[in-house]
Length: 259
Image (cartoon, rainbow, N blue to C red; front, side, top):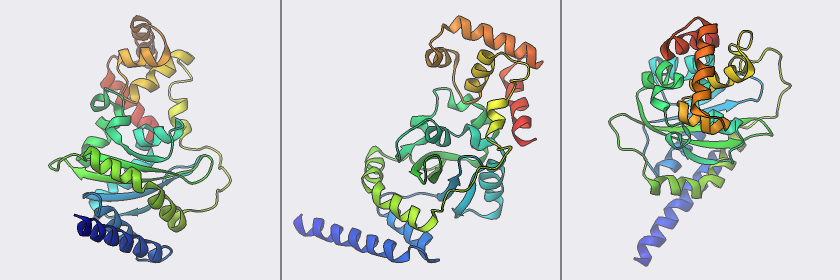
């Protein structure tokens, strides 16, 4: 048993050495993938920068052109604003490895993010490495498995968390950059401004929670109000927006994000 443990340690050390050596070169993505595969398998890897005041920027992906058109390009036009991994960064979560479904609201599979984007990319499970680049800038490395694959185990997640300091430093050394001045008219404001011209502040807040996947009970708990009050505000919001269902709300929000 001791010799097996030593062999495993030596293999990990060699992988770390290869990762460090590849930083700054074209070999880095392959070395990074190989290092993570010692811990867990995955079907796709996507690295994305999230500047505080700009749309996300793709740093790397291993997708074909068709997959990239949805998973990378369409995602950056607005759906990212509802991504639980992105919202965790905005919400002050600590850097680390997180399973998306652990961060998502309980009604994730009825959320606008799932309906308009996530179900189209056919992912069964996803882990995000949330890496803080600057005060408000983040890099997220997404590890995903398809619908037919088993979900990531708790052991795999624990090992990724153990190795996170190494992964984080490597990513920042290779893909990190200096913060840039914030441009005007940022896309992120589209979520914050959705419906604010006709809704009350509370109605707009509840609508945003619904879009993020919160149910009536979880929205009520989040805001510290009763479920009945949430239903009343939702009813008034729908009437002002000229809609009658959650599906119509999702459709209206999607046009707002990409318009």
